[in-house]
View 1 (cartoon, rainbow, N blue to C red):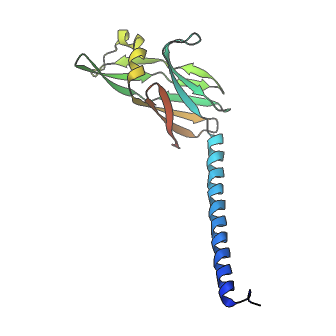
View 2 (view 1 turned 120 degrees about the vertical axis):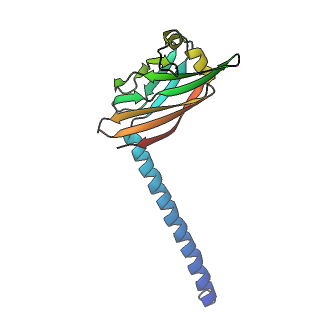
View 3 (view 1 turned 180 degrees about the vertical axis):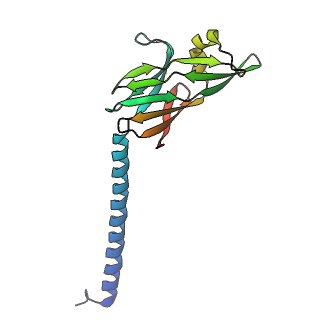
Length: 172
């Protein structure tokens, strides 16, 4: 029988070994994807939204808990913004109030105060800043605690008029 010729056996062994290697690689890839999906489902997912004019919401910056989990002790880190109007550059620092609890599917407006570089409170700018935030590109970092006590840090980047979550990492 020609099928059992040693060269055919060698070719068959090589092909089957290659197929076995591909299967092992694919199974490992699926295992990593499953682990990431489990991690994603166990961690609360946040999103940010900048509302300039809407019938339902007041203009402002909103955080939305998209997951089915409770978030507690959410804190937005200070943001430094630089604006240029008529060749005048102004740097502002935004400081946000802490959010105690954020229930599942809850949307909360972020309250902030604007300060200049000398740490003086700018009350007139704090109220009218949303129009300037629409055109600016900046990053927002939110540190929050999930129900099990793990602390997470989510980084959002704003480009054009939308925020996207760049990364969510475990702090503790």
